[in-house]
Length: 64
Image (tube, rainbow, N blue to C red; front, side, top):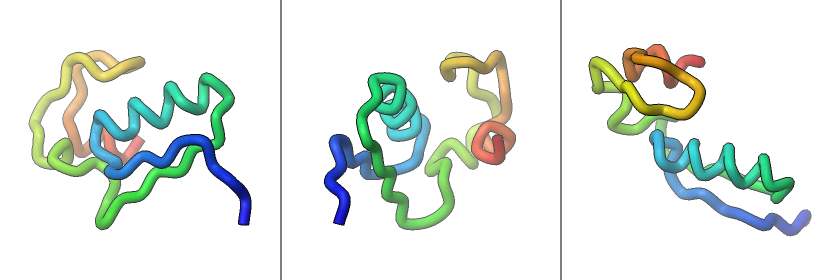
């Protein structure tokens, strides 16, 4: 078993952002999600402040 540095529970916007920044810091990172990545974001019509994206629909952001 390989040790990990960061375990993120949930792949919604906050969890994915945490994982992005952990990897940028060269930490071994694992993201756990019970269902599809995105969480509540999948039902959100517009997200304006996600790092690296302008205004984007939640479902489209989850696909990317």
